[in-house]
Amino acid sequence: MDTPTPSLKYVLYARKSSEQDERQAMSIDSQIKEMGELAVRDGATVLDIRQESHSAKQSGQRPEFMRVLQDIRDGTFNAILTWAPDRLSRNAGDLGMLVDLMDQGKLVQIKTPTQTFANNPNEKFLLMILCSQAKLENDQKSLNVKRGIRAKCEMGWRPGPPPIGYYNRTMAGLRDIIVDPDRGYVIKQMFEKSRDGCGGRAIDRWFQEIGFTTRKGKRVTLSQIYLMLRNPFYHGAFEYPKGSGRLYQGAHTPLVSKELFEDVQKKLTVPVKAKWGGKDFAFKGVFLCATCGSSVIGDEKLRKRKWAEPKRHIYYHCTRKRNYDCPEPPTTEEELTRELVRYIRLIENVKPQYIKYSPRLSKRIEHFKSLRDQVFLTGDVDPDKHTLRFNDYVKYVMQMGSLEEKRDAVLAVNRQLYLHNKSIIVSPIV
Image (cartoon, rainbow, N blue to C red; front, top):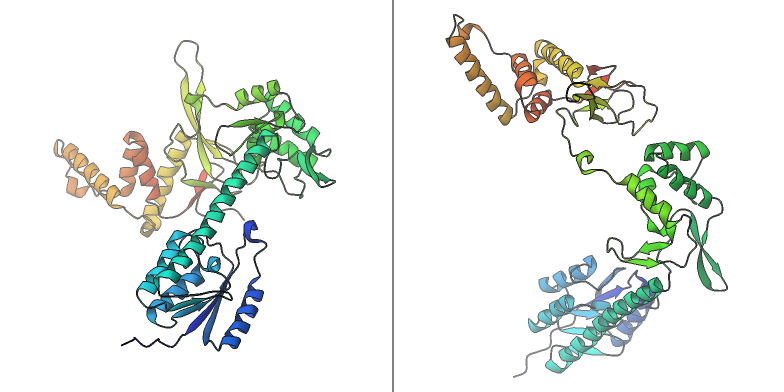
């Protein structure tokens, strides 16, 4: 006895990729119009319309398509109406989920204007061939695009927009990279200034003084300046892909000589001993500048002495990232330590609730208390009469503690701290 065919409950699914390789695909509105007319002609019951603009190259990445599959599993639909099989899948993962639903009997039919795929071996096999062919086309397009890019690089043309100082020009259908007459000479001066010892921040200030901007009128940031100084495009070469280490000789006009570029690279090379972030400071990342809101960082200075080793001094100062002319003065670590002890003593007396002990800090305070009690037991002082205060612990840590212990002690003050005229305050200056 034949199993009765269930009534078909269609969902109309339309998709168009936003990527360039599907620019010629029919628009979503056209797909819905054509499939709607087909449904009326064949008397198909369409319960819902689902549409999205999303690539089908990767499995499980289309929200609406995944909703369709889930509704089929739940029994809301049992048939799909779509323009072509490649609208449903261009990858093996999504195709496998469709075929699996057909094997389970939950997806009875997939219908297009020219074909119908039912739950039988021949039609499922044909569906898999058509979707696999779509995947093959995608893979071949990717290989062709990469091959075309490599050929373009070997001809000396870097893919993508050129850096500041150049722009793309199109004439008679041909594209060319030419020097920007309004910015090219400034870029050359930038390299010369860098070779002569001018730092990135000084170049940034110079750019602001002369009103130098990108072609879109945007300010050139400090990070962009360093990227430009390291970009081999300016001496006639370019790296592609980025980070690959593979250099191509460009067909564009260089702005600087290779010798000048290499001299700048030597200036930009940071010695290993002076590497950024190589030193740690007790109060790094703890304070903000009260005037401009920038971070306060530590800096080491070595004062040479005639008959002894250089003396080490640590200063804390505003980074001036938000305001190059910030007037806040630097302070030595000794001055800052005394100010911290004074401030924490004040907080403990006036608003002790602002001091929050972490489990790690509590253990350290208990250890300090046991050391202190051992000292008292050797003398005539009763430790029970000498109440331990947090400020006592802070004084001890600032003299004897490690960098981590000092930082944890300051962070116990559960408020953002600011530095103003070498003093600690709890709010910025408006």
